[in-house]
Length: 259
Image (tube, rainbow, N blue to C red; front, top):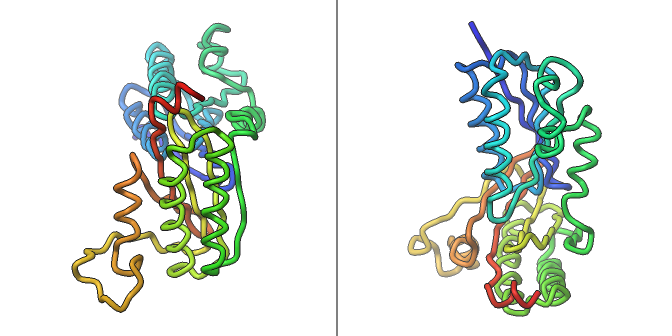
């Protein structure tokens, strides 16, 4: 039986996803390859590194076209996701001309690819803080995001971003009960917000009508509804320890042009 498997690992601190493929890449298994990569791109990490060092390429004539199509799809997303490939010297690398190696961002080792992924965005486009799981920390999370937006000359989105991160941070405090981290990243034309906590329990949107009036808004299901209403998209990434809940907010055309 021809088998191709893809193992996905996520570094929630750097927002970099690594996919390691093993097995044979053929006309019959390329759908597994394509589906796995697209699913990871949809999770909106800053970068995806695809390790090809453990696959045997039996479909060389179609592989390059598939890699190029995925590369184009990643670069045309809003926001774009850096897609990098690890292909050590061997059968697959020989099929890639020097032109394709440069265009597709192909590296000989995973370490080189990860180093390049870390440079996907300049430090000036990121802000990060680690906070204790207390309600006081929610205010600090709001301040971090608001100040970051103002430093990027984006006052129009600052209040929306502060509102969204407030709900994400409150959810971490009230339901995870652990320390949490806040990330805010300028990914033109979007603002990327993420809160990481130590609980593996995924957030659930409840029906606000069923909530008890004595409970806080977040417990009645209002919090995540606000996140969904204010953001273009949002999601949850699970890791070995805890999870990361992210949201994307679109920058207005006027603000983007001014920036």
